[in-house]
Structures are given as C-alpha cells and as structure tokens.
Length: 421
Image (cartoon, rainbow, N blue to C red; front, side, top):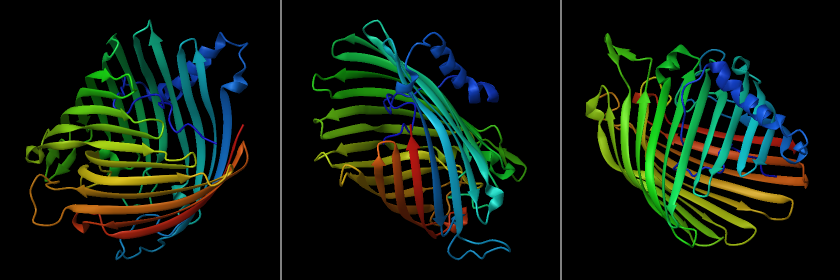
C-alpha cells in the first residue's frame, strides 16, 4: 500500500516554485476550500475512486530521545529513553480534471510521550498541488503546504515543547518551443517559524527563483542548464555584545540538470554545478565551489529495488549557536518484496557537516560533526487495505562540543498499523 508522501509527486526536484505570503489561517485551511470548490461542479463523480481516507497508530521506543551527548549529566527529572504513541487520521486525493491533475493530502495526528509528557502535541500536515496543461506546449505545477510538528532534537536538546511550522508555496511552468527543446522557470517560498524564544533566531523565509533550458531526447532522457538564486531572510536577529547579527544570505548557482533514462530498471538524476554563497553580515563566511546532488534508482528484478544518493550542499541548522553548514554525504536504500504480502526495507546514511567559521572567525578547533545511521524494517499486508510494520534504527554522531553538537548514540524501534479505505 503506497501513500502519497507529498502532493508534489509530479514535480521534478529541480523545478519547485513558491508564491506569496498569506495569513496563517488562510494558509492552513485555504487548500481545503480550493479542493471543495473544485468538486462543487462535479457532484456526480464517483469520489470513492479519488478520495481515500486512512488512519494509523504507532508505538515507538527510543533510548536517547533528546539526543543528549554520551557524557552529558542528567538534570533532575531527566532521563534518556522514552516511549511515544501516535495516532494519525487523514485523506488522500488524486483526481483528473480534464487535462489537469489535482493531488492533495490532509493529515492530523496526536503524539504523546510516557515520561516527557510536556512534549505532547497535535500535528498537522496539509498539501495540495495542481499539475496543469495549457494548449499543446505549456505545462507546470502550482501548490502549497502547511506542516506543524515537533522540532527534531538533533541540534537543540531541550525537554521543552518546541513546535515548528513550515509553510510552502510554489509554481513553475515549461514551454516546449521545439520538439526537443524547452525553457522553464519557477519560484518557491518556504517559511519556518518556531515556538521557543531560544529558537526564534532560526525563523526564516527562503525564496528560490530558477530559470533553465533543456534538451529532451527521444529516449526519455533530458539534459539542461539551470540558473538559480536562493535568498534567506532571518527577521529575528541574534545579538552578540550589543551587536545585531543579520544571518541573511544570497546563494547563486549555475548547474547541470540531467535525467538519464537507461530503461525501466535504471535512472540517474544529476543537479550539480557551482554555487556562490554570500552573507549579509559575516562576509568572511562567503564561499563558493562545487554544489549539488546525484541520485540513482536501480530495479534489477521485479522484487528488488535500490536507490542511492550523494550530495555536497548547504543546509540550515536548527541550533542556537549556528544556523547553517556545508553538508557532504551519501545514502543507500533497498527494498525487497519477499512475497506478495511481505516487504523488507533497509537504509544506510552518512553525512558530515562543516561549520567552519560559523561565528565569522576561523578557530583552531574542529568545527565539524558526522552522523551515521542505519535502519531495517518489515511490512506485512494481510489485506489490500491493511498494513503492519516494524522498524528498528541506530544513529551515531561524532560531534563538536564547542558548537553544542556533541557525540551521542541513539537506538529505537517502532510498531505501526495502518488502514487505507
């Protein structure tokens, strides 16, 4: 049973675009009104074929929930392990409307903790996307999302509840002006906000604009060139010694955009080139160099699938000390459909984060950390609408205590039951 993890499943990774700001309540519920309006004129349609309710319950145990350093002493009332329980209910939709395709998901959840019950929260996840076509040679996407969840403990180890809200809007379009050539452009906006005052320095808005040209081969492969500009704005400035620090940045990129189709069994995606990142305040942190990501999918048999990725790219950090890093890493995932009802999945991941000159000055100490993780899971589908799953993971970090990125180990497991109607 496959669930839509994103309403943008038709959107190429390099072509995501965002729209303008909206009031909080409008962004949270506006997509639901959009979906309802689209169906008002089609009451005779069989909604059972396009709208799919689902529900799931999960029990999890983690032996280092807050990702505390191995040598960190425990405060009074603090412990490392905890049990989590979550209940999720939602709807998925995929509906053609003439030549257009509407996809959407609405999901709400309740997550509770046995020991750290002050972390209990209600999660929300709403998204909608429209894949549009105009005439014979114009197409694109428009959509948005809203998500409220607990901020991960990887870089901020607090037992206070810290909810993160992420809002996103995007739109893009492509014009195929010749049988084998197209031009395209897009705009994406992502906005992040945090509950805790100590985390509100990381409130930010990221605007991505891109334009590109592609050659489309008859084999299904594609090669193109794309120029992108990413602007990050931080409205709540940090204060050091009475000086307000503007963490905003501008990143400009020129990259190859390649999709290599080698058949049903093998596909390779490359979005890589050169990037230059400039900072509004600490210009000593300005840097440039190779930046990008390569992903590959290989399905050697009908029962076995592999996916791999390698990347070197900048990323935001949810810390009270630093807010960005240069990440280098790789991952490998495998799925084995052992029988018609049983599947085994596994993953490996390693990522090194470089925080060099994070404070605007070069320091004679190691400002990096490395996170290694692995997971193994099994799913069982006794019925087409029912799925049971068990998953175990392990995670290790060798860190930089100077930046609050200490060394830790964490292990956990989860049991999940899901029904989709």
